[in-house]
Image 1 (cartoon, rainbow, N blue to C red):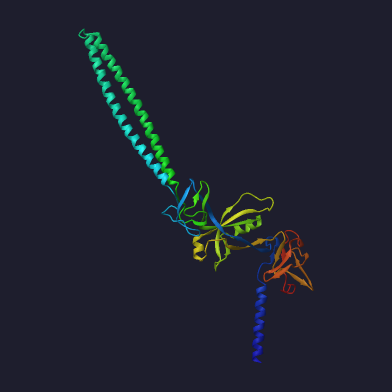
Image 2: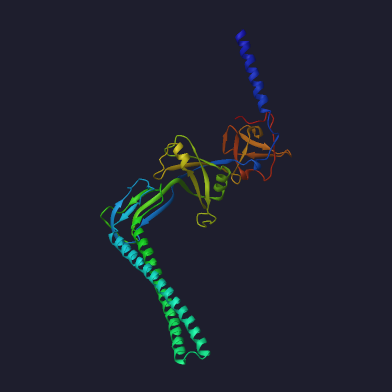
Length: 370
């Protein structure tokens, strides 16, 4: 008897608690201000952040390749070395010609200095003899000879200056030839950004590299991009959820990505925009994910369906026999047909209710059973 009484008391208490819980919440509800949401799962595959094709700029045989497919580019050695004996000999010859040109400039500078000293001497001598001639102490023939020697010295300086200019120009050309030879030799040692990963290898030691032909293909896996094509509603939902949480193949836990690009161009055919998400290498490493290859990613978006469906809590839904209806704040009743029901309420078609309608809470007797 005591057990039955205790059970009855517990049941009564639970009923009172449920009644009190149902009595809480707003007294009015605006369905168009609380549209239903739909979940949409997007699927995409990762791709490297950047890619690069390594090509030869000269034609030569391949001497060595520092890394193979799937390996990272070393940072302290050339990635590909081409046979460069001819380029080395050309550089040595250009350097020798440059040294000769430097020596020729030095000789021309000395010759000019000597010509200038001779000119200065002849100028002073011509002036001295001119003064003697004017005093009547020197024949005109000797004065004219001094003038001739002075003019010849002036011509000698001009010739020395021209020779110096020519030798300086030759030295500049020789220096340019050395630069070109060094650049040509450097093109036999092909480098690439350290840390990039080799995705394709097209040559091996001993094969012939042709100028312009690809040698290797590289990708930068420092971060991964996730390309998407989204409608305006999907893009709005994605931005609202930033940073974006996604499920990535190989990762035990969800990862977060950020929006890196929203293409301003709009595809008139698909009515969508291109969007790219970024997954940082640190997050991938922490999750133990191998970034190589295209990894499948899934993103759940919750889209507002206000133009299609509305959400109404159970406390605002009335039931009479098999018919469901709601009552607005003016007292008018509106029949509804629930599309589906869950713990939060019922989902109805938006067109079944007038725009801007405000519903009134149902009492306990009228509320529809869940």
